[in-house]
Image (cartoon, rainbow, N blue to C red; front, side, top):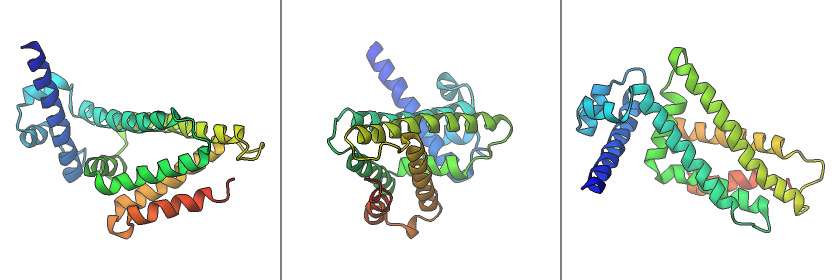
Length: 203
């Protein structure tokens, strides 16, 4: 009975977060209310308060979920000691971009983070949090370039951190353009070409 209760609680939390994504995406974070989220999730406000302190806590949970998914994907890939780390990273980046084309949940969450938020006042904390997490993601990318140097696939004077920062900025620009106009980019077709263009002159 206890297990069923825990499962139900997890299912309710998931429904709340799914509903929050839809509401934030449609109305923006500032204009969304807990009532909107409760109505969309078909739960009471009390059910939301059981899992979250307030609307910003829901937003933070969505942000955490996206970051954990991203980090887990990279860490899982890094467990594979690939003989060609640059090719490995190129394929990973292509796959991450292509996933935006089929994963509507991720598409909406990223749209919320980039376009549906005003990072002033109490929201400024989340911008600082995003910057800190971006730094960690850059460090993860850096591991691929460090391995490439060990395999002598990169010049000895190449700085893995600088390369990682450049790659992160490059990918972010592609993502923002895609979120702004999804019809302008066909990720399944263009993402591998974008990444080939970035990586082809590194080796």
